[in-house]
Length: 163
Length: 123
Image (cartoon, rainbow over all chains, first blue to last red; front, side):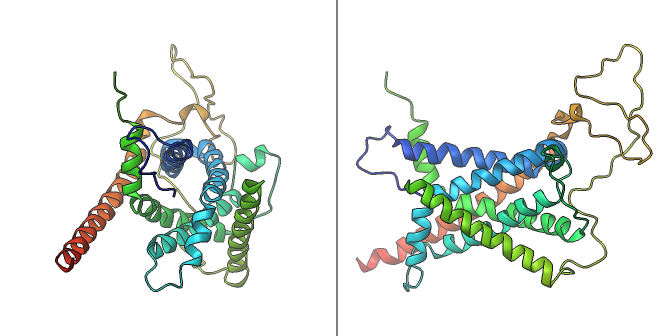
């Protein structure tokens, strides 16, 4: 994630930082709602899950520079972001497999798009459950490991303008 | 242009992960056991699906009454979605996330404090 420039005045937040902040917040809210299947029902769960898949592609693309930079530093003995990199890698696997298996076992969204997959395999059902539970553990860790960035940007975003 | 190049790279990485999933299914289809699980998100629903409404009761737009099909599975009832009564499920998810975030933040803040205290005297 980009770092808030120290040279900026307290209340000014760069447009890109603002975009990251609100887009990531929307993904977190969307994920929380999509996970709560008992609240959303199958229709919203499936469409929201597909939307989250697209949003995650964009999220990783927006932070691709960080991925490349941190991966290049992994072999250094004291790389600062090794734990975050590992959590993010595990989350990439879990979230991708969760969305992919969710699409494969879709009962509403795919038929709505007139796509039918002749799948009758409990493997994908179980893979979806397992990966969803893994993401519920990893998503908050992913968020919490950036709490200083979040707190810093939130303080600026929600700061009251002087009258 | 740069964004599109990065998006293509991300899509390729995601495709590799999906392929790993497909390979997992191909080479170890019984990874999760052949018995036991009944798929994700199954809920016990008490009571019977409504097949009729009392006189004077309005049916919300989108709600379908169970016509008593042969499958025994009630049709999807769009009007039942996002019912306030099911908010507990959402709060439960949010509570788990909040608890994990709080735990990680406390541990991280403690570790940073300790590291600062350890570095302090040597300056």
